Image (cartoon, rainbow, N blue to C red; front, top):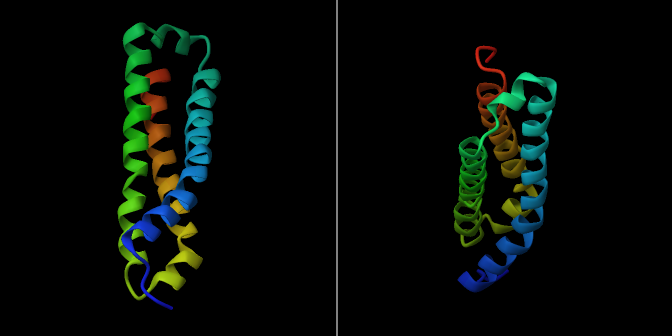
Length: 117
């Protein structure tokens, strides 16, 4: 098979990663909401305009970190390992989601249940 163009690799990468971004964001939101609910009523006291803005900032940063997958994906698609990569790139998604979930858990515990991390 011919080596794909940069445009083809970018298009394939967007087609693959963007639907999974929804799953990524939902999982991180569920983790945050879970720790908020589990630590009620104390977690209500942690809510303020500043904490909500901080949560928004963390959500944006989580999505910026998600974009790192594009670098690996496009780079690998332009190599001779394209077909193998396209079969197994879900592993990168799972590892990245697990990593982001652990970080989200620690942040949520720190915000909604300080001292229990």
